[in-house]
Amino acid sequence: MSYTSTMTKRRLTDQQARRIQAQRSSEGNVATETGQPGVVIARYGKQALIETRAGDRLLCHLRAHLESPVAGDEVLWLPTEETGVVDALVTRRNVLQRPDAQGRLRPVAANIDLMLIVFAPEPAPQANLIDRYLVAAENMEVEAALVLNKTDLLEPEDKLAKQLDRYADLGYRTLATHRELPDATDMTALIGQDTLVLVGQSGVGKSSLIQRLLPDASIRVGALSEVADKGRHTTTTAELFHLPGGGRLIDSPGVRDFGLTHVAPEAVFSGFREFSPYSGQCRFRDCQHQSEPGCALTAAVDSGEISSERFESYQQISASLATT
Image 1 (tube, rainbow, N blue to C red):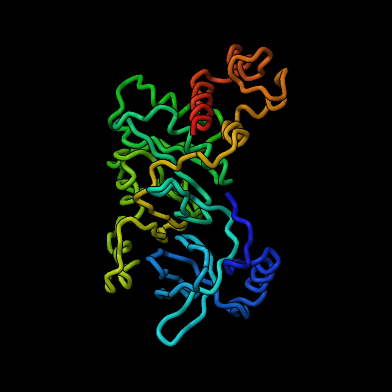
Image 2 (image 1 turned 180 degrees about the vertical axis):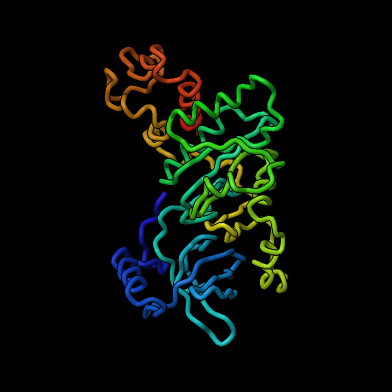
């Protein structure tokens, strides 16, 4: 979900963002007149841990009325006598949001390239949760890949392996893995140089995957040592880590479900990529793809071109949005 530029919140206009990007490309380390570029590693209240282009890290204050920066945000910051101040946010490519206690959507992480959707034999996957993640990724314009973890627990002829194959047939990148493997080369090959976030229900082994990607615990502890020393560390904030083999991981312990209440029905349709050939093919323009005559989707299900499980999942998600 892309944010529009709002100068009243000290966001950059598209023209300014393009100018800054051009200056970064042509001038190397020369800062623009609006501040020096940096990346948010973590957000703590009215401060943010910033990584500079030189790789240094410093805790910066936030300008008043600045839209809330989160891990992965590109920012412009200005030095102060003590540390620095975040002066502006560069327009996000996308933002991962989750509802707060009041049901309002709050940003969690920004500028994500890859969403790894993790599921496992234990706990058993919740009905249509994977498809909800895929809809969210599509809505954010983020690539999604599926990771079947704990494969050492799979029973012969387990349906989960076939489920993974079904997503692979739809064109999603997939991976079957488990914690007993000697290293994380299977994971790093999937990630490449991307900035990723792991999502999935509690207990599927996201923490073990992160431990494989960051085997040296000091990498994670040291990344936030400056903040921890100041007593500001919290386990619920999203944190960005550089992976040893390249790429970056945004770890957000609180991300399990996104809530799709802000997603339009047509966006849910787009989240099921196999539906695309049937867009606009229904007899009625306002077809809800339930029991209407001449529905192209139900015909595709009857002919076996669309799986009945995925179609049922789509109907459940659509129905849940209609009742919120």
